[in-house]
Length: 367
Image (cartoon, rainbow, N blue to C red; front, side, top):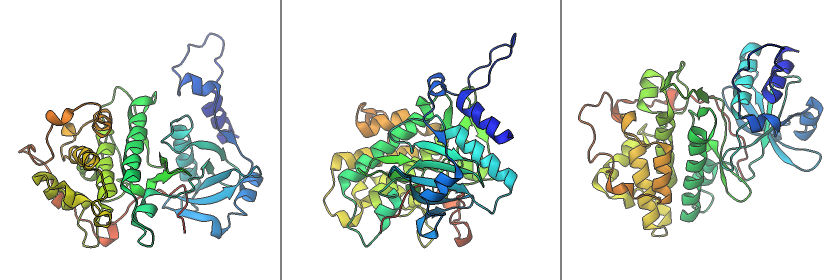
């Protein structure tokens, strides 16, 4: 009953008692009037996933499993189920935290929540991304290389989604796990940011917050977060810069020799030989102007000092070409701060620490 009452609060708010002072709204007022998600029965979810059949398992993380399902009306869904490994108290906390974060988020480039189920466990129901993740499309060697135009469109759409989370929501959302496996592709290959299991609210009056334990994906973690647990908008900006480099090069954030993608790319960004970043499978089939935009944006996003990184507003302007800020800014490495407290070579990516993500993919890996 306690959890059901909390769900009602998420969805409709609490009635004010007579004489009680009004409280500031938890979420956008319009969203509260017309919530877009609903509560599913366990029978609906069980039937849609064919009894959570392992054949329908499309993602697994430290805290959750994701199953593909089909509702009776033919609507394809992804059911994120809190993992058995967690305690019931922790599962409930994780469930409510993610529900409170994504329950009223509405953007074309953010994976939409369509409902939840609190019977026999905790389940979040999302739209199913039929084309899987960016990672599965980018790194599958059995497929033709992803075309450049699609790569650019994915980078642009993801930038718009992240800009919305930072600037368009009533309360800022720091995702904390921006990476290729968490960017899903719809039937028409529109990118959508997914998996808010690590996301945090950042009140407008706060500059940053400190988070423990450190969770996320090595190779994508900003230095200040990896070393000190400091989380702010620029934490996501850094991860987005790594994502841009991955889109351009089709290289993983950390390779088999434990070298980070950032360390590999920085020499090319420093000397301006950005064509060396491009996935060799593409040959000359890419747009030079778009490459410069993406590489320039990436070079700024991965600056070690967070105060020197751009905001997502500035990043989006660079990618869209709305403002020629290139005349005012330089590629990373040309004018780096002399006094740096850390460098990327200080980060040791061992086999045991190659991925600390507690997230799972909401979507499919196409066969």
